Length: 245
Image (cartoon, rainbow, N blue to C red; front, side, top):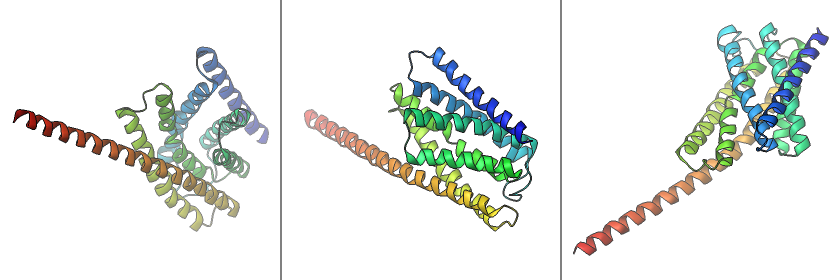
């Protein structure tokens, strides 16, 4: 069983690495980070779909059955995601592209997935955390791509930012709090699984503070720009009336 899990994770790691190499060959004029973020975007979309299917259709429901035995589909998805996180953590360390908080997030994610696979349980809530964590990932990558292509300061960029902040706040913080509560009050999960859940939620709050600061600064900047335009319009209208008289 352990050998089979290791082979699945190794195949996943090789798959993500090959996908990255393919993107590098197809986009030779782009940076390494561009191609890595394409891999991240691909994983985000794939993991959202798979984890949503597990949580909402295949089951069990994470809010009522935390600590339950892993299903075969949960194991496959966790192995797929574990290979990705190993790839991305290695890439971030090699290129020194991320700070300590993101590295801590990836490390905790890797440890949490390994823990669920080794225990053979708690894949239900780990899968739910995966869904909540990855739900905002495609938006984050879209924001980066818009900035790189010079289209960030547009209506599309504003919509992406709004959806990112709203989903992060509502899902990772709001729904995440409910999931953590269910995990803590349930007698089924191991105590160290609960500790891991608290650590992941604390990391989400660290991200949340940074996101709220960004949202506040952008809102103030937009407000001042709006007031400036209104002032110019009023002045132009007033000057126009003066010219008429």
